[in-house]
Image (cartoon, rainbow, N blue to C red; front, side, top):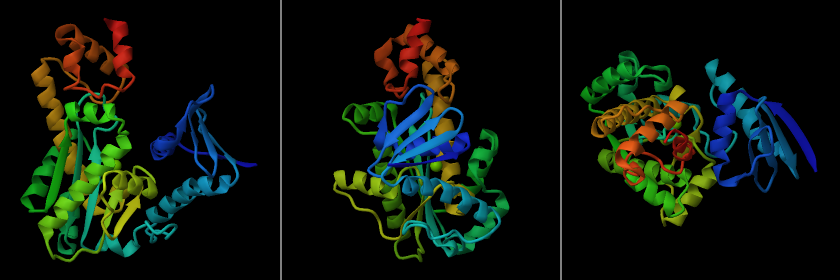
Amino acid sequence: MSQQVHVFNQETIEKMKVYYEAFLQNPPPGAQFRAKTDKAVITAYRSGKVLFQGSSPEEEAGKWTDVKSENEQLAKGDKPKAEHSYTPPGSLFKNSHIGSDETGTGDYFGPITVCACYVPEERIALLKEVGVQDSKNLTDEKINVLSKKILQLDIPYSLLVLSNDKYNRFQQQGWTQGKMKTILHHQAIVNVRKKIEDKHLAGIVVDQFCEPHVYQKHLQTENKSMTEQTYFMTKAESYSIAVATASIIARTSFVKKMDELSEKAGIYLPKGASAQVDRAAANFMKRYGKEKLKSFAKLHFANTKKAYKYL
Ligand code: MG
């Protein structure tokens, strides 16, 4: 057994946790998570240190150290390195392609919204010109404005909203959030492909939330198979204008749904999963009872339990 230790920033550690979702185990004290794959046991500590131990820890560690250096290279304008068969070729971002992204997965209240959209080559410059970029760096108001501009450009897209009722039902049936996301991304991509018919398509980029083989496994369990020319990439919204556009449409829809839910409840329902969210959940339950919460929140989140402290 050998081991490797690397230090990563919190953002990468959170991506890792999502990536290894299907392999999570009980974490030891001081650890953020522990996952066990057939190659290694991965333990991420609060300090940012990540320990890879097992038969071939370098294979798991390499996924993250490579992503780190790949992102650095991309930031300098280099082409992405073809580290596995699902990494998009650098030329794809300048060509007509589909991108997909989602919002709402880390938010206790509200649905998951997933969008896939097709950006033809001749629209890439225009979308950049109107200011489409990584929506994580934009305020909700700015996203709303951009979303209106995108709609005026007639960009073919498919937006899917998984309501809280449905989310909780799937979760009770044993679906992981990763599986829900996979099926939603896949369906949105299929919808967009139907819309564009035989228009030129150089490929599809999914903003990566799990390992490609896990994505494929989820599809197989529902008798679906992955669309040809599908690529995966973390932080894809920074490189693909189609993913950035999809991200803005998904985010706009999520914000709108959150406003609607707050209005319906007569209580302000905050985004995220903070202690403020626990208090809002407690207020909600005081007024309507727990049963009704299933139409507003992702019940399996720890916030449900934490909310009882305030009752
Ligand atoms: Mg994403």
